[in-house]
Length: 497
Image 1: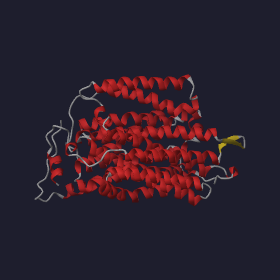
Image 2: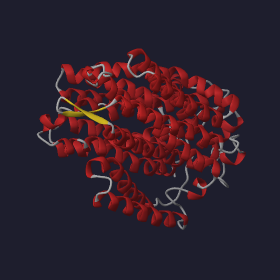
Image 3: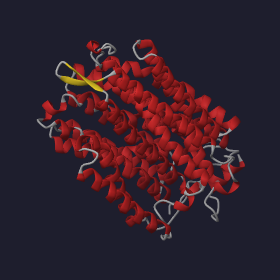
Image 4: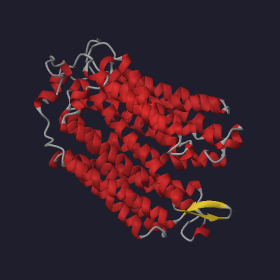
């Protein structure tokens, strides 16, 4: 295990370089989170043209999105555990480096197999947010931790809101490879900035990495998410999809059994089964479902042809600009989320956020024809997402030992990812079922969109109910470091702050 970095004498004056690095820790980590979200969304404007640009089928092109989803879901808990064991900054830098390598591969090739492989590498960046939150917990004093974690959580929405119009502008006015050269440069900047500005956390949980547990979780999640993401194309009752779901159930059941009998498991299921942790994961899954429908449905709704009677026929650039106010709102409301959590507890912030998400969908149901109402409803949903997503990691940080914060937050992000995948499949099923022919093609009806909003609102209310059932969330003294361990010097200094 690496020796913890020595702590400067508080009576002495630290050198200017150290002070600058300390001030830049939060902005650099937030930049990494925004960059991760941008990477996930930049391919969206390309999807309609990629079959022509790569000489492949639409089904093959869809894997540029599916591969990122699958690898991100698998690698997030795995890299979170690796961060707890081998160093969070080290693993965070590696994840950003893999993301950058994937971007360079996309910039250099038009072969669909290379693009899919590169997008799978970029999925490693999904672990950036939970690793960064764990670093902030280790490095910051309690009075600064809440606002920093809230900002870090909101970077997911900020990056998504920025990535779509940015990518659309590049695709519209330049060669599509230019977009990936740009993200490669940003990725290299992110790797360098993290390595320079972020100190390695001394909080570790030594032991042997659970390779069997990682492989079992990977196999179970790939089967589950592959079935969910491809069910609408392959048929929900097809042998392939049913086989994937059955295989996932069997593999994950065996994985659960193995984890309970391993001395150093990949995921500490004894923590997961505690109400404060388990219910937080349930709330994360439901919140992920409710939030994701907003982006999916809004983009399709405003781009629908005017001949539908409700569509606005907007371009992809204009569509991205419609979602931009939501990203700005997430940035502005993250400090408010931290204040509510400090005053009332993150459980109340989570419940409030889920309720606001449901209210946003009520606005969408009331009026989905006027652009200003569409933007208002989407922004309200984004506001609720800020409150909810900012509260979730704080709940986890208060409920688990310090040496397991990265892996526990990784599982929480995984639950959000599963919720988003299920949301995508459910929204697609609703819109396909409620479609009508227009110009030789089937397009969703306004009734289908309203049903999707109602479904997301109902799930938001379920998330609110789950949040309210979480036991009291005051931070117990035993969770400030791994049970039975000797406090590291930096951990002890934070406790005394």
